[in-house]
Length: 193
Image (cartoon, rainbow, N blue to C red):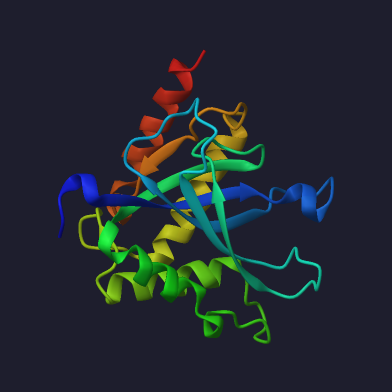
């Protein structure tokens, strides 16, 4: 693995998709992968990060893969992000090739959605050694779904998803460490102006 400066961060980013679904519905979470450098400047408008996801908000209405350069600051719909691990700069092209593989989109399967895309993508990235996971015991993608849902619910309940600064970010530390992560989130909420 290269030096720490040559590593990018890979996040699970959660977006509030409720506006797309319609008013009056419960929060709908859209999942995406976000890759960016270690050091982030919340005042910069440079598109230093890349969002990868499966989306069906396209002209055709069908599920499609999207790769979009974005700023490191949160968008109005971003709820937060979970740091999953690191990717060597040398592996970025391989990561892009793996995520853009058209076979990853399985629109004809019932109940297939953006989470299934993320789940399969993360499993492949870990299996192929492209993603170096920070969590003890590795990445449990099934647990990560629950972890991300709880994290998003806390952000919405505490109304922390306001503003355009750096998104609220916690590190995924594995299934047994969720309680500590939520406590850190609560402390963060109390420290925010």
